[in-house]
Image 1 (cartoon, rainbow, N blue to C red):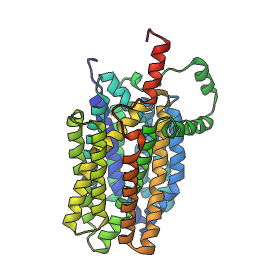
Image 2 (image 1 turned 120 degrees about the vertical axis):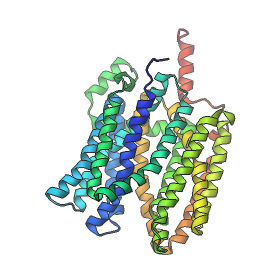
Image 3 (image 1 turned 90 degrees about the vertical axis):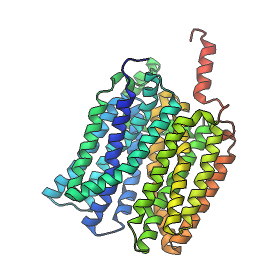
Image 4 (image 1 turned 90 degrees about the horizontal axis):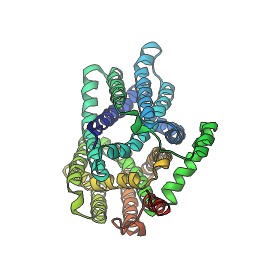
Length: 430
């Protein structure tokens, strides 16, 4: 056991970075709407940035398998801080317009996407260095993320109320910069990439980042979708969650509450969901060993399906609030388990490529799903679109529960474990 634990500093840095993103996620759409006067501007901006964000994420994943992950995390937070701080600077010097948001949004993606992947890639190394059980550490990390999801919007409202929309971004920039400062206190060795064969390392150093990014995409897709059934199912389920829930939170519910004349109620529903997720994540971190992984997985998915069905019915506000709480409480174990499967089963040498590919594809999938849902709302109304999303989620749940790879989660052997077993057989000294 190491004398000085680094997990608290890692979690603090992650929370600060995520808090900055959470505040920006509330402030930026309001600023964009106030600047352009166009309610569709935020959706258009997301679509414009989707493909570049995906490419940036893939390139960042390649970099994470070549360079120190701690250093990339620091650099990413600094770039994020600069991109947000430039918004009030541009507003003061030239005045903001839609295209400034595109330019600065892409600059922010250069920091946000690789930074998110860098922290994901660092987490198992931090747990290993401190001798902490990875599954419990994942639950604790998820709990902190859930707490930030509750605090972030409230903090954004406080900042905007105190100083206004654009000036509030100085606080966001400060949070990202502080996250970089805290990460600097972590030992650089924790971010080192695993050793590879000398010939492989020498070859990679001679190649450009574009070629490495293409290889990273191929490696990421292969690792996530072709080498391990649990990883494949976890990846596809993650996409399903992001697309369905992103469409609910980003379009259907806002349209529903706006048309009913109570847009402020959306915040209460999302806060209830986040609070439920926080409670269940804490409970899972404490009680994970009490049930098998399969039991947690099944109970979580069934509960989430019930919560989504309640939300999709667009009932009265008290019933919808109960559905949001049910969804949040049910989602905690599944969220922690999916993260655990990713970290536990992806080979260390491919972790940057795999996580970078996953994060990039998720970031591209979300705006596409929201755009498709917006077309359904326009053609059929929000009630029909909501029922369509419920149907999609029920189908996803059924497939996720029936997947052969997920039936024996406590007995299955990962690709990484199999490789380590083969290495031990080949070299008895290991």
